[in-house]
Amino acid sequence: MTQSKKLLLLLPVLVFILNPGTSFADRPELAVSNISPLLQLANAPVVIREDERVFTWRDEGRGRLEVRMVITIMNSDGRSSAVQHLPYDSFTSVGRISGRLYDKDGERIGRLRNRHITDRSAVSGFSLAEDARVQGVEFHHDEYPYTYEIEYRYDFEGLISFPQWSPLNRRASLEKSTYTVEVPSDLEIRYTSRNLGGDADPVVMQENGLTRYKWSISDRPMA
Image (cartoon, rainbow, N blue to C red; front, side):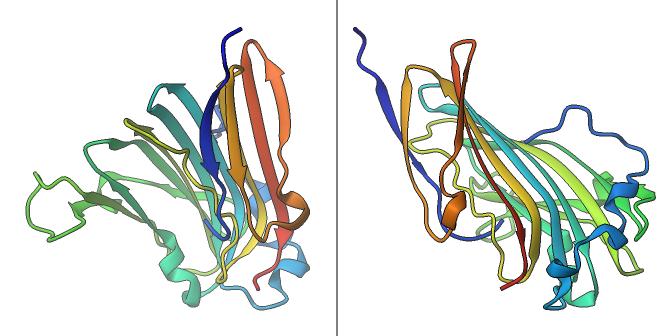
């Protein structure tokens, strides 16, 4: 019998997958009026409506992480949360970045364009040839509240552990976050978690030679 492989999966403590059928039209379900009063009790400047992540293990040291986030910026105090910093290097690539912007009623008012994305060195900011770099995505609107949706993909080479999941943010309330890990059925994974309470254990599913682990957390007001 072939011995199961083991790989360490670390699920840390706090913050910050792909939905193939994402529409580019209006999304009335994202209207600010649909946010639970519970998530606004502390006057949260940001409400994370959706944070969906899917990590697929491909083979030794290679994997792909697909991310989709929907974030409502309630007021100017949350403006910085409309900026995403996506680091990469020679072992990690960022691709397929797309985004949409919605007003307070969930009506689409814009989409992400090249001018909203910058690329700079993570070290000096000088040379495009430097290894450690960051893509910055800034997607703002002048009228609050507003909501933006962003999707992007990471491809990894030389991995020794899986990407971490940190669903809670001290500056934001959270409607829903999920993290799905998909591996071959003969790959045994281990994980640790902190401060997730009853949400620390995943739902495990087996299908077509794959095992899927899915963690979910929802309805957490800003601490």
